[in-house]
Amino acid sequence: MTGTGSVHSWDVATAVDGPGTRFVLFLAGCPLRCRYCHNPDTWHERDGRRTTVDEVAAEMAKYRRFIEVAGGGVTISGGEPLLQPDFTAAVLHRAKQLGLHTALDTSGFLGARATDELLADTDLVLLDIKSWDPSTYRHVTGGEVGPTLEFARRLSALRKPMWIRFVLVPGETDAPDNVDGIASFVSTLNAVERVEVVPFHKLGAPKYAALGIPFPLADTPVPDAALLRRVRGQFVDRGVPVS
Image (cartoon, rainbow, N blue to C red):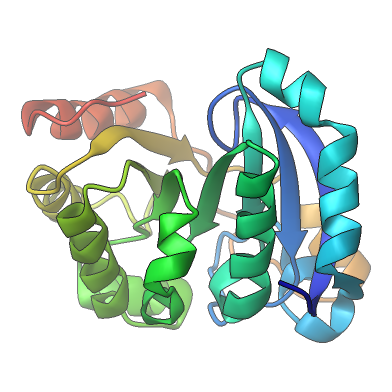
């Protein structure tokens, strides 16, 4: 497979984008505008660098032995990787040819663009379910929750291993009914290995300032320990493994 894609950057990271030490490829472009997004510099494809699959494969190969020893692999993130499904599929395929574990980090909003071949080359899906309540999801992201839920059901039918991510934002996503809706839904899915309750943070605020974009949640507090315990407890009560 050949072709080019719009790449924001790549990095080697541990324990944040899948198991072990991983080569993480960040693609440029995202259809959602999450109010808590900490990477506004990845919103537009035009802001990335046109990069060939061969270039990415060469970079992955440099770290192959190190990644294998560390029990890691390759993660494609963003932005939103499924905004560039052909390029994403080609990179995943090359990673598998290198014998590396693969992960796809996605909101699932464009899950319909993921072909069966793309998913066959994906060992793990990091699926971000941003909210359950449709109006909350729309407020937080500007999009609709339905496509993500449909994608999750498809992955479940395939028994594709999943890590579910939920970003906890006080006053935005923390309503008990909203959390319980996600927990109840996740409890019906096959192959969910864990749920990550991710506390909202403001580490991306300087990027907004540099881009001249107002940060929508500048005055929103980070979750306190009590809120984190309550939300994690809601998942545990539904029999869902939480990290």
